[in-house]
Image (cartoon, rainbow, N blue to C red):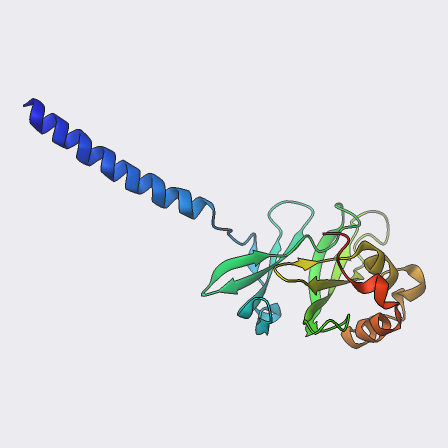
Length: 186
C-alpha cells in the first residue's frame, strides 16, 4: 500500500511540475491589451525584427482610453512599443488616422510614424478630437521615442502645418541630425 502511495505522489508531483513549468513560460508571454484595430495593422519588415505584423490595439475598458502597438510574429507578441502619448495620461484615445514605416532620421532603419486622435474630455471642447503625431525610432533591439521631437511636431506653432505623414517626414528632415537620434527617452 505504501509503494502505491509513493508512486502516486511521485507521478502527481511530476504532473504538477510540468503544469507549473508550462504556466511559468506562458506568464512571460506578453498579451495584447484591448482590441485589435484591423485597418491599422500591417505586415511589414524591420531590419532588426525581420518580417512581422505591426499591430494596433485600442483599450476602452478603463478610462481614459489608450492605444497600444505591438510587433507580432506567428500571432504572438515579440515586442511591445513604449506608450504612445507621453504628455498627458488624462487624454483619451479616439482613433488612428495614419501609420507609416519610413526612415526619418537617415540611419538606414525604418521608423514608425503615427498620427492619432485624442480628446481631453474636459470643458466645452473636450470631445473635439485633436491630432497627436509621434515617431518611434528603430534601434538595434527596440524602438524609442524622443520627447523633444514629439514636442516639436505637436507644438502649437506646428500643429496646423503638420497634419499628415508626409508633413511629419518633411519636417523631420529640417531638424538637426543631432536631435533626431531617438536615443534619449523611452
